[in-house]
Length: 83
Image (cartoon, rainbow, N blue to C red; front, side):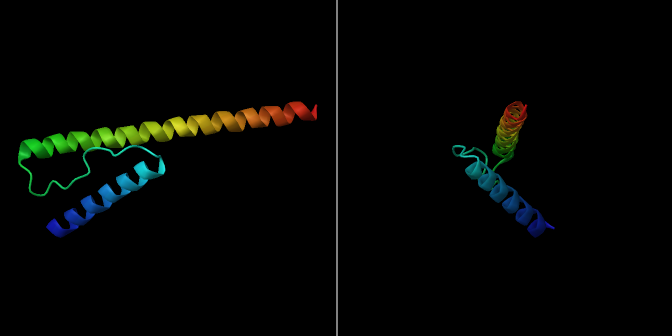
């Protein structure tokens, strides 16, 4: 069980790093291992991971909204030029 959790956490951290890199975000906090940290530091790390996930979510939402506006604008321009 412990090995499965460690593997999951490793994959989670790898995913966050990969997404952050693709979104050209600066280094995000909370991506170090917490295996041997005291409880108070693990709690802090957990908070940092939640903040990192939220930052990634906000960046993705902003990019999606921007893309939707660009598509809508392109569609409007295309339809306007036909008439």
